[in-house]
Length: 93
Image 1: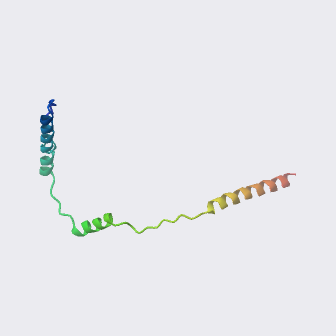
Image 2 (image 1 turned 60 degrees about the vertical axis):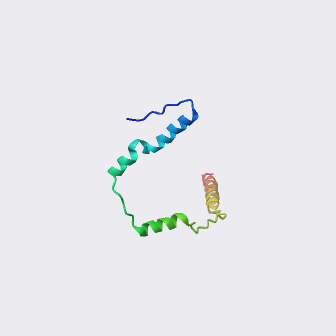
Image 3 (image 1 turned 30 degrees about the horizontal axis):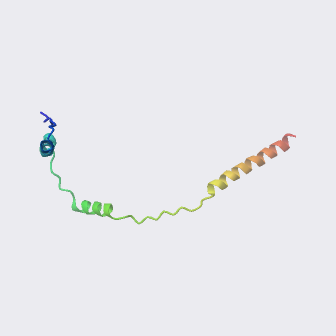
């Protein structure tokens, strides 16, 4: 059964109802999970490694330089195509 919050015009009573809702442990969910789930003892080495990896900044430096290889490849392709077309026109005459 889910409790229903009844809003009453007096501020103190509404705040008291809101406070009591938080004490219900989300309608018994916490107790149900406690009965269904088994406690786990994590490996301390794993926990320490994870803590270290999450709290330290990785030492990675990303440098972006000018890379004209793609532009040169496109230019060479266009030049080769133009030369091939010119040779084709010369041979066809």
